[in-house]
Each structure stands twice: as structure tokens, then as C-alpha cells.
Length: 165
Image (cartoon, rainbow, N blue to C red; front, top):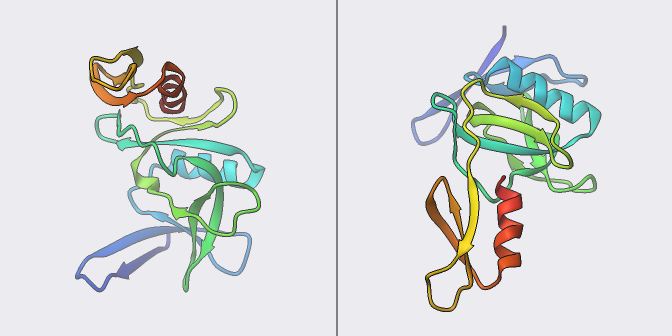
């Protein structure tokens, strides 16, 4: 398999595996990315699925409980030597953030529960809404038993709970 190594101006470098693209350049995924993740992302990209990406520690399967830049459509950003996977907010978006594809522990369709990829050791976070003990807040969200956030309404806490689950 062909590889591409990019030397950054800070003395670090990143190595990518190159996969055949449908255009003039290959598609580059981080060298440490699980091939099943590559297949799931390519499946979502080609078929136009809107996905939720769970980032985490692939060695332990523990989710990082990211809130931002986790929902969207997989698209490609053009570089000088390859295309790179990015996550765009909606189908009419022109740009988005790079995907930390080597840190993915689960991918599912954003509507429904169809799982496109899940690490064998993935640990689903346990999200609970409880009454808050903080002044000015009515409810709190706990993830895996630890306080994650305080909210001024139960509705706000439940919206975040649904997003994080």
C-alpha cells in the first residue's frame, strides 16, 4: 500500500495510507486508522449518509464525549498530493473540519441507530439527567457518574443528553 508522509514545519510528521480515489488523486487516511473505519467512512461518503462520529481512545474504547464537530456528511478536501476526509455540516456546505479518523471508536447514522462501525472494545457513555445542586440551575448532566454540565432547564439537559448518547 502506498503511503504519504507530510513533514510539518514544527518538526513533526504525519504518515497517511493512500487509497484509490475516483478522481485524479488518492484518498489519504491516517496510517493508524483501522481499515474498518476507512470502509465505514467511505461507505458514508459514497452513499451520502449523515453520521455521528464518536472520537476516543482506540486502545481502551473510551469515548471522549465530544460535543462539537461530530455530526455531518463525510466529504473530501483537496490537498496537493491527495484528498483528505472532512466532516461538513450539511449537503450544501463547502468546507468542514478534518476528521481524526485514527481516533474513531464508533460511527452511526445520525438519524436512527444504524451503526456503521464500532470498535470491539467501545464503551458507551452512560448519560443521566439529575436535579442540580448548583444555584441558578435546575438540572445537571452526568456522564459515567461525573458531572458534565449544568442547565437552567430540564429540557436543555435532555437535549444535550440525546446529543451525547
